[in-house]
Amino acid sequence: MKHVTCNRRSFLKTAGLGAATLATGIPRGKTQPTFRAGRRQNVLFIAVDDLRPQLGCYGHSQMKSPYIDSLADSGTLFARTYCQVPVCGASRASLLTGVRPTRHRFIDYYTRADDDLPGALTLPRLFLDSGYTTISNGKVYHHADDDLDAWTEMPWRPSGAWTGRGYLLSENQKIAKKGGGRGPAFENADVPDGAYHDGVIADKAVADLNRLSGEKSPFFLAVGFMKPHLPFNAPTKYWNMYKREKLDLADNPFAPKGVPDAALHNWVELRQYYGIPPEGPLPEETARTLVHGYYACVSYTDAQIGRLLNELDRLRIADNTIVVLWGDHGWHLGEHGLWCKHCNFENVLHAPLVVRGPGITGGNSTRALTEFVDIYPSLAELCSIELPEHLQGSSFVPLMSDPDRPWKKAAFSRYFDGDSIKTDRYRYTEWTKEIAPPGLALRTNMYARMLFDHETDPGENVNIAELPEHRATVEELSGMLKEGWESVKK
Image 1 (spheres, one colour):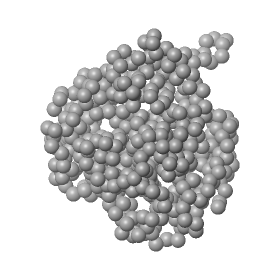
Image 2 (tube, one colour):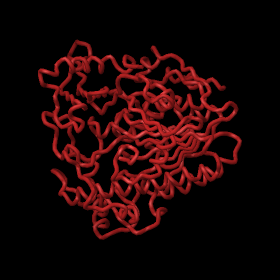
Image 3 (tube, helix red, strand yellow):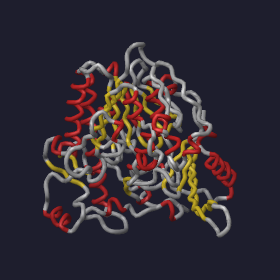
Image 4 (cartoon, rainbow, N blue to C red):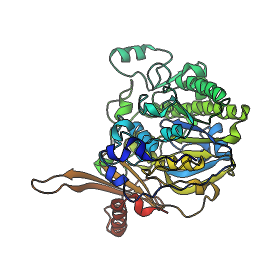
């Protein structure tokens, strides 16, 4: 087994922000071979942009996601997995480095792993250094040129804008684009799957599987699908899978009672599209069309994922390939009067995760609290690669064979000033500002907070943080938030 440390590129010396905390109190990982001796496991690493866990395998009967559902049937479904940051760039950088965000690291859409943690031994680089062929297709990192030395070949994306341009330019789109807008937020075009980017990405990934299956070295093939990210463009046949009038709209299209202003936003990402009002709620028909488009895009991407899974079977390499599927964060579809992500509610922090490993009994589901920073150490353990020292997650491999075992007490997420903790029963968030009074040490002041009881209020409709009867709970959770992730390990 190759022993890998972070010293190769002096990670802890060059990481800058947060490096001191990485070097303290994190024991070196110990791993044991998980699968059949002498067989090195391939990895098919599937990322899906803006995919909330509204899938058949998560109990949502309206969503048609047969291929992801079949993966869950043969693998382990993680029912309560949370992203670290509810925005693409930061979420992916955190996951692929195995390091948590801070106020000054992994912040927003523009985040790059190689800027925020220069020299970090990233997940794909770990596999490259361990003798794997590492390939990146589609949107894996948010920025195509991030962490370039982690890949055997130059990361590949289909030509054009990464979000996918409209296939047919309507008069409205032409007008919007002349004015610098993004065009409509959805498109229903009667075109083949390959007319949009995810079909092209699947084509490339299938070709790579055929090529890689004949090589001696194992592979780490990362495939990043771009839908259901806006705009909701999908071929007509996927729109036709749903009866528009029967689709459920959000049953809580209003701000939670007692919620602070800091918790809400104006969903600027969506408002940039043609036909979306600059402020205020959406007309019901527009909301229904967007929900319809989101469903169509999920089913479209599900079909492309099915092509990859079927190719593993056809090539007879499924029994030697770990499959990991994750969505980089959740998404709002009108809940709380919100669309998009960019906040600290459950709907955007809760994200799907399904893992299938050869030799591990499939069809399991676990409600243990897991996080995206847990993916890095878990994959390293599954492939019998020694863990680097800087990781801030916990391998969830034990849950794959014993899904009901005791596990960590909380999951942590943040977005700009807001830090959240999710326990078995509650979600608690604090918003704080750093202030530096003249002549005094830097300190942090809280300016807003919210608490939801998921046992009695799973939709997060009433903020109970300021109610006297919940003072003790607020104090306990605030203390856990300040003590941090190391204090709640299993």
